[in-house]
Image (tube, rainbow, N blue to C red; front, side, top):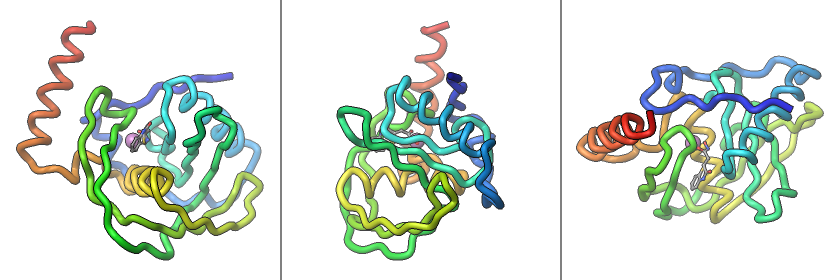
Length: 167
Ligand code: GNR
Ligand code: NI
């Protein structure tokens, strides 16, 4: 059981581009276990390895209320996307900030599971939003980068103030 520290925006390490996983090993599975525990404890519905300062293409996700539907994506690729939808997003690396972001409504992703086997999943709704949000993290992008520069500046100021007050 290990809870990993989550990088907080605007940490520059959140902008690193994650590398492909070359082999899914026991070490990969240990990281996935720690990432899942960290996500459930936070609590959050998704977590990208980038957020725990591991720059490999690994995502865990569980949008179920009962926390019994863990999805693992290794080396995910978006192979299809369609439609457009605006939904409210939050991020464990940007605590307390919720803003609307425009994304594809429906996505098909191909990835490897934790046994290293390929699978394909088509998603819409919250799962589709979360997949796109997490894949952004692997590219070094945080959801606030979809907002105007003015909003980004205000968010950074708000986070600074929040952190001053919790110290
Ligand atoms: O826990 C999370 N909730 C969430 C809500 C709406 C859109 C995206 C997300 S992902 C977020 C966890 C997180 O930061 N993942 O990177
Ligand atoms: Ni996030």
